[in-house]
Length: 150
Image (cartoon, rainbow, N blue to C red):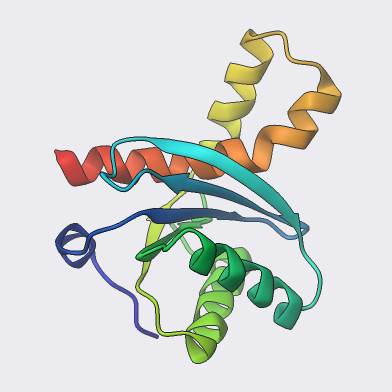
């Protein structure tokens, strides 16, 4: 698997695509070309791998994405469980189709942080359900963008 580290990500240029991979959906976010701001993009309902990959690759091409930032669901104690392996397998299979830099980022508490913010904003349950995945992707991606500038 052609995963990259933070220094390799820092040396590349262009927009980044943030992915919050869930079992039923992918939340997507995109950075601007200068990598200052992450914006929620969309939520994709997962289907078969080939269809999911096709949708992702279209988004990558349409937005001239230079690298992927994929949320890695690490357990609270820092261990890696079945969901972590599932995300690694997805990335590995995607890399068999397209050689694109992939950076894995610990996504612990991202969904919880986004949900807390939506609750504080008094967002309805329906709107929270529609937005949580893409907002979590933006939260993950913004964390990486902030780290790149630090």
